[in-house]
Length: 227
Length: 252
Image 1 (cartoon, each protein chain N blue to C red):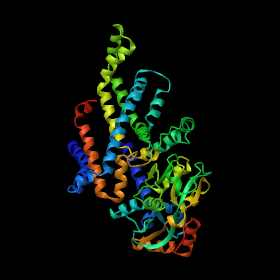
Image 2: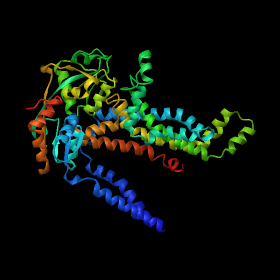
Image 3: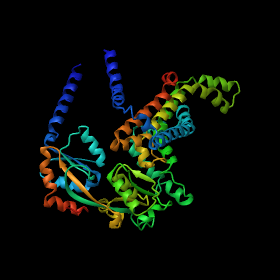
Image 4: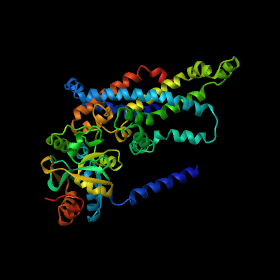
């Protein structure tokens, strides 16, 4: 019996210490950011003076979470329809596995039934823009999968499971050697404006940092243009 | 005290359903349910779940028999490995399937290069993903049923001159029938709800690979009413199958 009491006391002590010693999470700025901002915002968070917790997902998923009451101090979206100040610009690009095994040259190849082609789902901005670009180019696309977010699409392209996909230019940059990019002509492309909004006072400093020279430099290094 | 805890457990499970029903767009339901995105997803979900269960029965019952009735070294390890998909996060399972059966996969690569056959991004890809995550449920249930069945009936049949195939067909399987039915139901239910492995391995395309869970996930982002309508359909279909089978299901 005494052993049980002693063990329980020890467990309680461990739990209390774990709760105390886990770092001051109460002060961390909680940033919700679109999936395509993963690499850029990870670097920005490291450069930021202060604790930052990052959540990356599709813009629509994040918006739904925030509307349902998820605690967030900053919302950086890839969807122009969301509120906030524009802080970055992105364009679409065709991504192919390194070496371009499918021999893709442009949007017209998306009509080829023999190739494995992917875009993002219509519910996420990347997918909407991609379909708009294909429609504008008059291509009757033979899409094999519309992925729920840009990162899962990119993973399949990197792995060679897809011959081509339409992603953001920043994603092509982020993938480095694993993926080659094929530019999409301006008249079938979009300039995607990313808005950022501070949802609480705690987020104001972070937003200011993102829009500062240092933040803009980091964004540019990852392939974004800054307004 | 037990009753109180049981009531809490029941309330915990039932409250989300009540909330779903409360939010349901009853007036628009008819219109929402007629949309192609709903009918396509439902058709695909039911078809792939049934196919996955069929494959699981054909492959899983022999496996369960092997695990229950034969002795071999490393049997415990084999059982642990073969039921790993049950505890593995489904997305991890899907990624592993891609590495094995994808176009650049261990087996999928050579098959694609020689025969042009590819599982991902097709209906059979969904079936493959469903089978991977759901078959262990069937294997475990049937194995437990076989273990619990009295082997002396089989011995008696053997002494009366029955061949091994006859024993299997006329004694073993009928004895294990409740377990097989229960296993099949669990397998079907798990396959119906599968999301992570499906989207990672088979992709997402309406009419070809977009099952109900996928459709609900995407609809939640843009059209919450449609998402709730889809969820209600999924719940209704599941209940329609589970309720009539409840006696058999519960007696395992």
